[in-house]
Structure formats: structure tokens, C-alpha cells
Length: 244
Image (cartoon, rainbow, N blue to C red):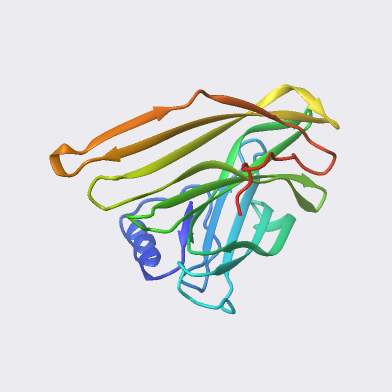
């Protein structure tokens, strides 16, 4: 479940309660700011544990406009579900520094990221957009974390799993691109951690003409497979694979 602070989120939550619906899983940490984000999710691989993440907008940023330069502190924890007590944590100040875009959503990814026989990572996805029709931009980043004692450690930092952008005249003419990536666990390993196979799909769209004479051409590029290797500290990302 995800909560974005503000009156709308509270109204939605109140509506669910009034309707008698049961809130499944967990309740995200309440946040004070309208631009703050909070999410939590039970960890299926480890019954009794819950993952909680918050992204807090820093009021000291040059502007409170989310489309201008904005900075977010990031707080991540794994909790004992029964006691709501953190057993492992991670914190990074200014984890997200965005220029011209805003952080719209963070989600938790509990897919089977099995890195060793007895170690499974979980993911955090961060979605940012600029909300523009003429010059649209959307980006989704995936980071992976492992639990080491009382600490959570990032092993994959901001892999771009989706990116969309382009420019057009608002009528027809323009160019757009779209990049999608999926991650699979390889049978090979590096420094004791399984390699990651990243499949990249990219397509380009071009539109020309006006009105009813507008013609659009989309080119789907050949899928590209890239293997990411762990260097002892983190997975090394090639140029263009890491978001800001």
C-alpha cells in the first residue's frame, strides 16, 4: 500500500474505512508534507517481516515546486510485523535530486531476487515524471537491497527499468522514444553473487504531417541482453543504465 501525504490521501483512506473494507497488509508511515511519499509491504519470502520506505521532500530545497529542483531524503527499514519494530534500516540524505521532474511514486518489489543460496534481495522502484504534453518525460528506477544484520545495503543502484520521452508540436509532428527493461537471475555469478541478466526493449516513434494527414511510424529495435556483474560491493551498471 502506498500513501502520498495530503488531504486527498486522507479522504481516500477515510473512504475505505467508512466502506468497511479491511486494510490488507500494513499501514504506511504517516507523512507531514504534501510532497512526501510513504509505502509499506509485507515480505512474502519472510513471513512476519514488513518492508517500509519513505521519501521526504526537503523544505530547504530552492523551490517547493515539485517540477523545479527537488531533493528527497530516503529512509528504508525491515520491521517485525507483529511488534512494528525495525530490525534492519538504511538511510540516505538527498537520495533523490531531481531537476525539472517530480517524484510521483515509490513502490516495493518483492520478486525472487535470489542472489545467493541463502540471500534474497528486495527492490525499491522510484517513478518520476515532468507532467508535460509537449516535452514528456517519465522514468522508473529500480534499486535492490539486502539485509545484513541490522543494516540494509544497496547492491543495485537506480537501474533505469523504464524511460519515456520526446518532443512534439502538440498536433502531430514530433519524435518519441520508449525504453523498457526486465531483470532475471543468471546461473553464473561474480564475487559470490548471482549475475543479473537485463533485457532491454527500445522503440522509437516519429510522426509527420498535420491533422488527418498525420502519419506515425514506430520502430521496434532488436532486444539487447546485458549481464550485470557484482564487483564485491554492488552491481556495475553500463553507461546509460543508471538514472539520476
